[in-house]
Each structure stands twice: as structure tokens, then as C-alpha cells.
Amino acid sequence: MKKISILVVAPYPEFGELAVDIAKAYPQINVYVAPGIYQNAIEYTQIYPSKKFDCIISRSFTADLLRETSITPVIDVELSFFDAYRTIQIASSIGQKFAVLSTPPVIEVYRQLAELLHIDLNLYTFHNVSQVEGLLKKIKRSGYNYVIAGLVAEEIAPRVDIKTIRIASSRDSIEAAVKKSLEIYNYIERAGNTSDIFLSFIDYSKDGVIIYNDSEKMVYVNIAIRNENMFAPARKLEQYIQYLREENEMRIIKRIDQFYWEIDGRKIEHEDTFFYAFHLRKLYSYAQSKKEAFIRMEDAEDIYKGFSNIIWNGIYREYLGSSVQAAIDSYTPVLITGEVGTGKTELTQYIYCHSQHKKAPLITIDCKELTRKSWNTLINNDKNPFHDVGYSILFDDISCLHPSLQRELNDYIEGTNMARRHRLYATSSVDLAHLVKNNQFSLPLYRSFCGFTINLKPLALTPELILPLAAEILEWISKKFSKDCGGFEDEAKVLLQEFPWPLNIIQLVAVLQQLVINSDGFIITTELTKQVLDKETPKEYVPSTMFDLTKPLAEIEQDVIMYVLRESNMNHSLAAKRLGIGRSTLWRKITNQQ
Image (cartoon, rainbow, N blue to C red; front, side, top):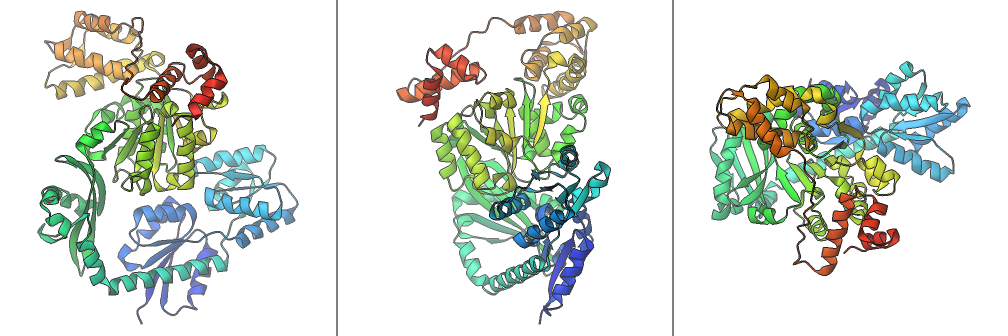
């Protein structure tokens, strides 16, 4: 009988001991125990070759992290009502106030149990390990001396002078995970025995499948690839074989000819030989994507060559300190706020390009352009990456999202566990907390995105950054236009530093580009700088409506309302006054949007 190998990543010693004891009742199982929690767990599992194990058992965030880094099935030891009830009984017997601190799935178990038992529990949720110490301090300040929590909080608690009651997994919970491992293994084995059926299914799939051997020779193509419309883009996959040799897997969206294609690649070892398999799926035509102005898809390879890496890889990043790296390392949604032109979208791209999610594309939703019709098109499209797993999704200018769509977006995020399936980002040129306070933005949606917040200051408040940033951007623009510009005259520097920069970095880049293009020498002169800045001097702003008058009257009305709302910083009272209607009438028109 073939032995099934299971790696148990144990957050504490008793967890591993229970797993070993349980395995004695299953002669077909070999259990290996590795200690570890969160990031440390990955280091321990790398001691063993991943192909050695049929399944990995762990729990909570540790299990989530292992799924990101391992191709082996990972089984989560779920918290049972009995496990939670036992900790409540222990805490109650001490006779002192206690709180509960854990991840969202665990807190949900305690919440349901509290409703069932008709008891009040003080529940605190963290989405990232970096939040734990701050929450423990908050719990301590609230008068609690005990907290029911996991291992991360248990390690930090002594620094906060608070005692912990460990959330431990019972024997039944661990055994349930072992049984689930056996079920998954048996399912995979049955699938292997019916490989001919699966091969037939792949051969007739409408998506393309192509496999190369280690000599980069094509050894399999399915019928879809043989179709001449797909064979041409498939031939361009050979360039990614070297990448798979080093990274083992990839996921990108590329424009090839007139279509956007989703490309999944994986390095496969079979009988000591490596193969490189690609799955090719047609998403959108280029013409269609230009019409759908609210969405765009990019991969890290393309973004990394662009502007975002220039401004965020130098002095600007140093100014923000450790917050950018913390956002890169985090798995929680990121909210980036700041005035127009402060580089919010570019910072999002930089974080994405340096995160663990960079292997899958970044999808940007322009909330200014997102309408009811386009939202329905997005959600009802079975090829929409929203429904998939592992992407990075940016909601750009989320403060401009229509109120009715704010509710629907939050319902979708919560109802589909979107924040666990994808890495979410949002940007806003308006203070969302202020909008929430004034009932002008959805509080639940704000909560969905405010797990990690970065606020970017305008250049007018950071004059010390202007010249160093200008020097970095000047070097990049000079290379871009094959010009030899390396600095500014002293008076030109003064002009740059004293300019108000109402459009911030975007305007700085535009000015520097004009200077480089029009400069005749290595040093940019004061005279040229003055000429360019004079043209940029803020003048009285005359807004351009540019409404699409071919739309139905109801849609034009909605466009006008949203335009005035944005001009009024989403202040409903001010917008209603400008429109000459009552606040309640404005609210009714907003909520009655198609």
C-alpha cells in the first residue's frame, strides 16, 4: 500500500503532537511535523522538497500564506464551536474581563457562538500581523487584562502586559483536517487514473493549451491552438520558458496582435524531466478595451519599465519611510490618498510590482468612468477576472464612485471574499474619512479598504523634495528623449522650488519634459525655465463639461449630477445648492440611477 505523506505545519508543539498521535490510527499516512507560524512557516517548509508531500495541514493565516508559496494542496484546520466555547469557559472561570483578538474567520465563529449563547463578547479583528500589537494596546487601555488569541498575539502580549488564553485546535478539528487530506488525495488519485478523459477534455477546450519540453520543443498543442487564429499568439509563448525555469509559474495579461490574452504558465516535473505548460485564454479585443474606458489590465513587466518605478524608487520613497515597504509586505487592502497629481496611481503600481502578487496582472478600475451599465457588464462577464483568484485590483478615484455602486461593490467584496481572493487597492483625491463622517461615502466600503492607509502630501508642503525629485525625473526624461541634460542653473532651481505646483508630480514631470525637449545644452537655463513656468502659472479655472449629448436624457442628468458632486468634493449640500434642488431631491436622483 502506497503511503500518503502529510506535512503538518504546527503553530505550537501540542498541535504537532496531536497530529502525530492521530496519524497512528491511519496506517496509510506518514506525518512530518515542522514548527512555524505566518512567514516563519514558509522558511520551515522549504527545508523539505515540496514534491515530497501529498498534502500540507496548517491553520488560519499560516495556511493562506502556504497556499501562495506551495503547489501542494493546503488543508486549513478550522476553528470549531467547541474549540471557541472551550476558550470562553476558561476565560470566564478566571473571573476577569476578557476580549477576543483574531482573524476575520475566527472572529466570525466567536460572533456566531455569542449569538447562540446570548452572551456579549468584545471582539477585535486584525487583517495583518502588523496590527496585532496596536490592538493589544487598545484592549489593555479598555480595561482588559486577558485576551483570547492565537500565537502571534501570545508572543507580543508580554510587551503590552496583558495575559493570553490560547486559541488551540482540538483533536477533533485536527483529525477532521487529516480526513480531508485523505479525501483530497484519493480524489487526485482517481483523477490520475482517468487521465485519458481529462486529456480529451483539454484537447477540445476552447482555451489554448501548449506544452514545451526542456529543449523548448513543442510536444503538445490542443485543438484550439491548432486553429490558425490562436496559433500565432501561441508561438510567442516561447519567450517565457526561461522565466518559468527560474520562477516555476507565471500569470500575465498581454496584448498580442489585436487581442488581450490571459497567459498562465507552469513548470512541471515528470519522471525527472521538466516541461513548460501554458494556458492561453482570449479576454478582450484591443478595440473593445478602448471602448471600455473604465478598465485596463497591465502586468508588472510593462509597469516596471514606466514612470511609477522612477518616482517611487528614490527620494520620494525615502521620504515616506517604512510605510511603502510595509504595504508591499502586507496582504490587506491599501488605501492611498492625496491631492490630484501626487502619484497615488503610480505608488499603487510600484507596490504591486514589488509584491508577491506581481505574477498576476494589475487590473485598474477608473471609478470616474464606472457606470451602472459598465458595472453590470463587468460582473456578468464570466471571463471577468473579478471572479477569479490572485489578481491585484485598483479602484482608482474611489471617492467618485456613484453611491448606489458603492453599496453594490461592498456587497460584492464581502459576499465573494474578494479581499481574500485578490489584493485590493484604492486611491482617492478626497479625504474619505471626512466624506464618511458627513454621510457622503459608504462606511462599509471605507472599512473594506482602510486596512492600510498612506497619505501623500502635495509638493507645496514638501518643498525639500522638489529639487532631488526633479533631478531623478530629469535623468529619466533625458534618456527617454536621447538628450544630454544633467542639471539646472542656480536661479532655475530657485524658480522650480518656489513654484506652487498645483498639480504636483504630474505637473513637475510635464514641465521637466518641456525643458528637456527645448534645451540646447547640458545645463537647463533660467530663461528657459521661466518661459515654461510662466505658461504653467495657474489661471482662473473654467471647467469644461464635455457631456455626451447623444445619451438618453436620464443619463445626461446623472452625468451632470456626478460632475457637480465631484466639483463640490462630494458635499451633497453644496452640490444640491449649485444644482438648485433640495438635498433630499438630490439623494433621490442619485439612488434612483439606472
